[in-house]
Image (cartoon, rainbow, N blue to C red; front, side):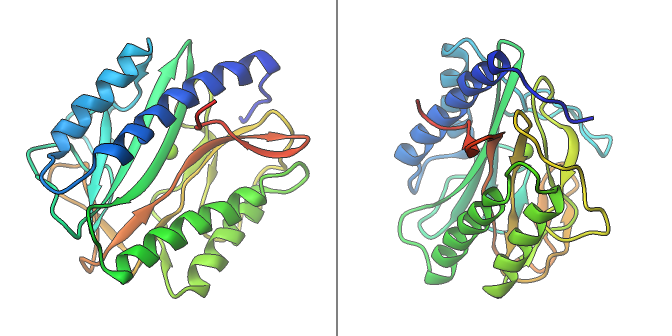
Length: 255
Ligand code: MG
């Protein structure tokens, strides 16, 4: 069940969130053609551990019976939606890469994803990245006291589909706190469930995954990498946030 965090817990989540934001700050700086995804992983892990935090994803058990997740971050290139495993792939001009970062500090998690352009990318790719972030923003704007989870879902789906995109169904946002994945689930599309009513002190990871083509996805033989069924591009934007009396507050940012 989703629970209300105390002021003290929210402070801890801000500090965990800042570690995640620091990693993204660095990723934005170093992503370029030629860098491999394992190098990005190594640099991310170093930042997380230097701050006294632990990468939440490393060793995460596989939902499909595969090996525990080997990386500290997920590196999802082009048609990879989420859960791309860092490896020897060297980024190429025109790629897009979604980086998902989770860190646990002092018992609390931060979780955030961004999609980055590698060098010059197509207008199609640029637009997808922009509108995925905007879909996140529309969802976040609904994370206010008194609303329900479904208000977030509806805002994301309506925005994404109004731009001609499709919303991934198989993976969703989530509550977050002492566990990386807590109740409730936060779908990026409307379901029959209205979901819980939001109140101050709830902490959520809102994370639209938006596809240019079909919403359908499949998991590769490594039992982690999720790709679009049609091979078209996918983008991901996520932040951990708190519902407050003054509206949503992003926790995965630099303070
Ligand atoms: Mg997440």
